[in-house]
Image (cartoon, rainbow, N blue to C red; front, side, top):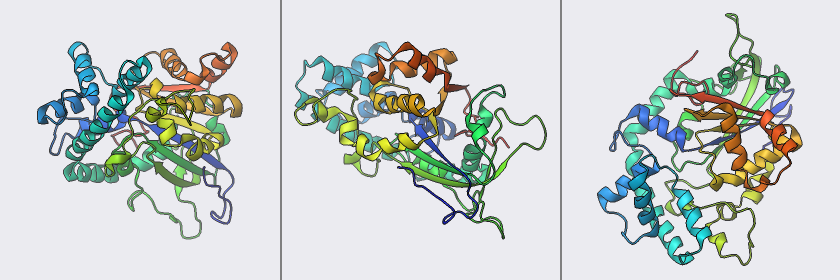
Amino acid sequence: MFGKYDKKTFNEIKSQHNIMVLVGNGFDIALLNKYKTGKMKGKTSSYSDFYEYIKYYNLCDEKNILFKKMTEQMSYDSNWSDFELIINALVLEGKIQQNKIEKSIDEFQNCFTRFLNDLVDADLLLKINSDVQEKKLATQSLGHFLNDLESSCDIEFPSKTNYYDLYNFVFFNFNYTALLDNYLYLDKTQFDPHYWKNADRNFQFYPECGGSSGKNPTNWSSYLLTDIIHPHGIQEIPRSILFGIDMDVYDKGRSKEKRFVKSYWAQYDIKYQSYFDEAELFIIFGMSLSITDGWWLDQIFDTILSENAELIIYKYKAEKEEDVKNIFIQSCIRHRDSRKEDIELVKRRIYVVSFEHNNTYFLGLEKKE
């Protein structure tokens, strides 16, 4: 759950805003495309590049079910990008023994660790480290993200903010690398926990959508906290890397399918449910909005409906705003039979930021201010 803070921690705190962020592979791909450095210069963490890596180094048994299915996919769709949908299809079809599917996943787990360790090396990390620090991209992301929305946007979140508020960000990093962790680290150049001599505020938050019409934009002297969670594992612990599916109904005690359900193995309900209950604003960045991550989207749906929370979706080369909202709704597998009125209410509280050049304020790669 989000930590709860009062004047025992921050001298002048007035309100606390809990902001929950989900970050997918699109973020890592953007960084790798920009810097193009290191041992695998020009390659990214896309599943298509992973497939080529496996083939080039002959790392995988050709009898591996997942490798065979990936080969089929690549033969007619060079832009294919969602390996977990293959797992989903295999499990639901039920034509192949589940232990064989699981063995194939375990083999891929090892291959993916090798792939990431070659892809994300010291040269890349140091380059990103230097660039983010120099451009102050972390504090730009956290303080200015509302600038990415149109000035006419009717999002309610800004109206709830004020001086001396705490902005408490928790990032759920669905990537296995630490590239996002590197980007968001609050180094001494960007952040001082007690910047002022006689006041303990440490952050400037800019509450205006689309920026200010004048030279002196409104900003709140505030407090900042951040945390990052890797629910699906990290490359440094190969056996923690979690590939799998989502299922809305299964028997946790007897179901054979549970061997593939990410929410079961990562214990979503126990570890992460409470974050949704307490979040005021959700942000999704770099995610495909796939049914394999339906649990997370379903929880956001519920929180928007019950708590009037809001959601900002960042979509690279996005379809129309309405299409993005529909993709989100369709991936909420636990709400397929929801009332039309509820669906429309949720959609009204979703705001879409479409971009093409990774120059957004939030998790962007260029200095904007």
